[in-house]
Length: 370
Image (cartoon, rainbow, N blue to C red; front, side):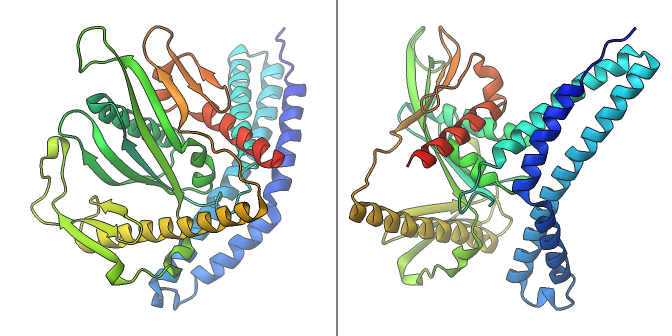
């Protein structure tokens, strides 16, 4: 006789999911979708292309959010039916399928539960991520490329749409920098805990035999903000350089000067874009990122001034937030949360959910304490 008692586990998942639904506010979400659908159906919508893109993007994000919640609810219902059928038919294969689906739902609901902790002003937005190599020569540029692949594999695992916007290849191994956009709801809130300095320690494949090398790479995460267009950037404040897109080793990959680099002279901020098809598209993408960075910089300065006036300046995270050890004890350790993974290979292959969830919970506790 088949033994399959998953009732308590399913009830616990339903209880957690009910809490998530309350936070998400499904009724308000549906009302928002109805309103945006009406706007998107207006015959004159595309008379204002910029506004049309905002409306359709917001509608797509909200629909994706509702679909995710609805699919989980349906999967819970289907799981209960599967359990009943497995018991009724005394079918061990169906029982194994039910156990696998239970484990999968625990993972999915756990991720969604973490998302409910993302209540920051910009957390619901898409994200632009920039990776830059730091100290460490060829090992650092190789490490930067490893991190780029890690995040792209993470997005691929979740079926998140990603667009690589710019890649600056090193003369030797790896990349000097790369910028990509993850266009899903809460991408910024999720990935923002990845911002900071990452450290790699390993036996260098580029140096002498058995020589341990420590290298660094920086990860920057900014939200894609609609209000960034409100930031006025006078033409006299920027320098625009155009050049040919490059591939590995500095090799040119096209025959036209379509890549764009914009330097904001007052702040020194530099944004490069080369992966769009035309110079106009690359310039528009670069300006959007520059405007976002300027807006964030302004708000950070305002927030810092308020803290200074209030006398509540606190220490920052510090330069190094995570270490990757690829020699001796194989380990990835987050220095803020203490979360560890004993298999760096799976982390570099995109299995980041545990590290990210621990970072989000750590940040939430820190914010609550403050």
